[in-house]
Image (cartoon, rainbow, N blue to C red):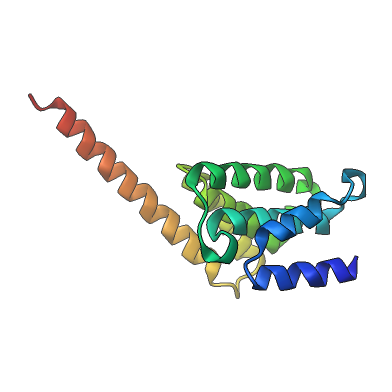
Length: 149
């Protein structure tokens, strides 16, 4: 297992997220534990957000991967909910899932609480708030435009 985890790190560093996903999918579900679930969620999120070789991923495929990552993280909630890394993964999944930024904020807050030295949690909160504001402004603008004769 240690060899697999080291290989996953090398693939992650090389933006080879599909290879990570395929290797983890080869492990029988009954053998999965928190570390495997976390590794899969990480690979799915990176695939969705960055894409292999930083090529990006189409939004619909990215959203599918993010939803799958959330489901996997939920399956280990009892073990993960008091870990900064688990809350970080939940925050990132919801931040990048279309129109779900509001759901990211509580996870990012918990992440910040569990790991106050990690400034990324506060950045996620700020980015989500900005996206929500921008979306609300656009909605108001679109509502006004649709009412004009």
